Image (cartoon, chains in turn brown, blue):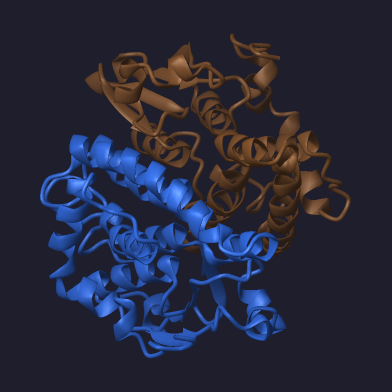
Length: 220
Length: 220
């Protein structure tokens, strides 16, 4: 173990954040101990605090602070970093094409689906027209789940890509949680439902759910 | 060279696609020969053609077809794949934290900025209210460039992360192109402007610009 790994990293998180959730699963799978620091995403004061803006200029969670002050943001960049420094319990298939499929599914969710229904976008829409955020989220989630279902039909086994948990699977619970939040009927997406159920019983996934975080219930 | 690399990959692209643009730069830097196949993003017929939906269920470009039929989508998944099979002319710093910064900047642009102003989103908005797409794009681009500028202030040298071209730099030209398209004043973002200028003179970046593609001018 290198010197770098001997300091506990600090995860800036919020229990309901989709993006922090993915990183919490990765940390659990890798067995990495960390300190949990809550950022209240509903507090403009906390988001705009100079100390936090220095850590993440985009004013979002997650951020992982490592090596006594180096802040890494963007969930998939953090997951790749964790893989680089802790290759054990790998989240990336060995075969380059399968590895590409795992990243493709992760990116389809994190770039193609999640950004269109994150809280700042919905807030912006609701300010212009009350209630328009939910309709917007429903539209883009449904479009995105349609493509996700087809990707999973091509590549999945027990999990998103074959029978091993990969980076793609880290992105499933939070997008399904959002689907439920916006009353999306998942019946037309049987592979999504099946894989979400398979993941939901794994201890590392259970450890990472919002309700099991130190700040669970904040603003609820 | 393995058998897999002996077949020319096929890039499904559209000259003005931000996402295909990134992959074209990576292919040029890696010196990989490929066949260029145009997908007319303004043709519903082409996007919904069963042959294309099979390649990319999300009905977007880019897609890279390798090994006689394996289709990889999502620009950053393709770039990571190209790095995996062609590690020479690396687009990823050796140091794990710097590598994380390069991915973080790439993801900030591709997940945090681009999805909110891609063509399907703007079309959806304009259908509801003529002209609303441009205002929306301007709002989110400005927010995104603010954070990008601060990330670059922390990590950049001649390019986005230090003095070597990385995956982060692949994402700069297209987001600056979009800024110009929506009349965003880049004066408040001097690092973005500076790095874009440094990249604009590199032959591999010149080869990848929209005007130098076989389908340049389509729908113009």
